[in-house]
Picture 1 (cartoon, rainbow, N blue to C red):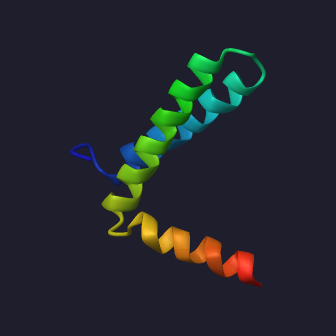
Picture 2: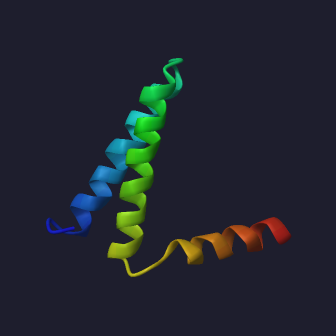
Length: 66
């Protein structure tokens, strides 16, 4: 976060792309590591924006209920 919100957002995009690339292969370890990297940076981005995972969870629950 020290490099700013734009850098965090860029890293989220990079990790998302890396995860998508790993989908095509059958390497569980690499896939799960990329998933963990993406999840970590996603959480960092939420925090940087002043939000929490609970807020996202509520939106998903609302979508499921409609």
